[in-house]
Length: 536
Ligand code: C2E
Ligand code: CA
Ligand code: CA
Image 1 (cartoon, rainbow, N blue to C red):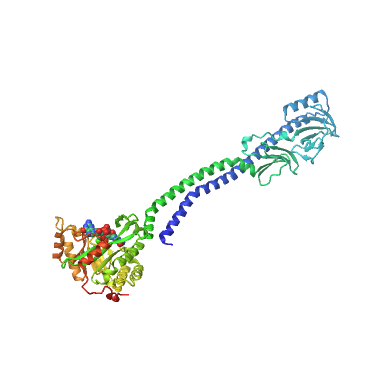
Image 2: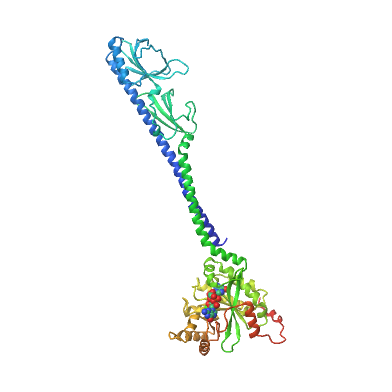
């Protein structure tokens, strides 16, 4: 893959990542939020429920202690009053009762003589006279009650019982956003009571994959355990997920479209060039170069054009800059060289004095690829290497002068010539020219335009003429539009010129007609016998 192609793929991957990243990030955040927030919430709920359990047990204990220290043990009027008062001050309790040492109820605030059975071991409490255990009424589905028992010195007893359910206060549903199961248990795991939020959960349901939280009392042998099934947690956050992801997806799509649009826009004209290369739309126009002393045709400069399928001709200024920056210029150049060969092969075979110049870019002088291209394209061509000129413009800086010098030397070894184009416009200056060792200089139109005007100074043309003769280089003037300019250049000793005064760049057919007219073959010359001299 070309460097350009690779960077385009990287750009696409980057665009996709930029578009998808917010969505991935959003889901990670949601997941973290649900885990952290959800777990934090159930931890807090467990602690809060336990605090209320402790508080109710404390209240019941305080009432029981009040009765115990007041020595309530017989069922006289006064004692009955006291247990009624204790019950009234603790509305969540089921019953206060006075019992004998055999646990037989003597009297109770409810008036009933309830018989209960212990379902747990008896635990001590922080108050030495009071024990804590769990009881029920003996029925299959009978509710469990916490029983606190005060033992007098003589063995008689007072008890208070609280239904397990009463210990777990109705949970404010808002506290926990999801459905959950809260269980109050003894330290040994015996269930005291369970409470559910909403109706979706089953108490008996084991809750696999649940988020769980525990809180253990420091004063009583109880703990609170809360489970939120993942399903319930998911249901709570489902809307957040759905809307979050819908929004995220929309945003990602917009980012993707914008990024894609941007890439397409950047890619558009470049793709057009690629298509044009594939469809062989690049062709050459040929601008004649005239010998100013003899008036004879010296040759031409091949100038690329794009001929669209509808016949429209596009000038190089419309695509060369992008072709250069995108690297497509190398394919275009190969196409130009092939067209040049195709168009001129026959006419040039028998006119070895005619030359054709091709334009190259700075990049061509930074590798040996151009040598391979020239050899490959012109192998077997009737155009001799000595008929070809390659132009390197002074407008662009050469990446590596030393390497360019070698490429130029190799082109010259093949038998071609090298010209410095647009002389006088570029960075190099004259020392630059000397280093490159070119065969020809092309004076830029800018200096030709100035001839005969007030601002004109002869200095540049004069010094170029001198330099050319000292270094035995050919000199070609470009953009000659008037006979006055022709006259001036001829007087100065400029050998050849091209410009509208002679002819604009011509389609191949017109140029070939001009060749026939200006450079007719001598009678009897065989069109092909000279092709054997073609350099390999
Ligand atoms: P350039 O190499 O300096 O080519 C001379 C340009 O001057 C041509 O423009 C030509 O049509 C124009 N020209 C010639 N005589 C006159 C004149 O008397 N008056 C005026 N006003 N203009 C004149 P063109 O063909 O539009 O090419 C423009 C530039 O595009 C070329 O400048 C060259 O830098 C580049 N180019 C053309 N063909 C190729 C190519 O095959 N490869 C590369 N790399 N560049 C090319
Ligand atoms: Ca040129
Ligand atoms: Ca030029």
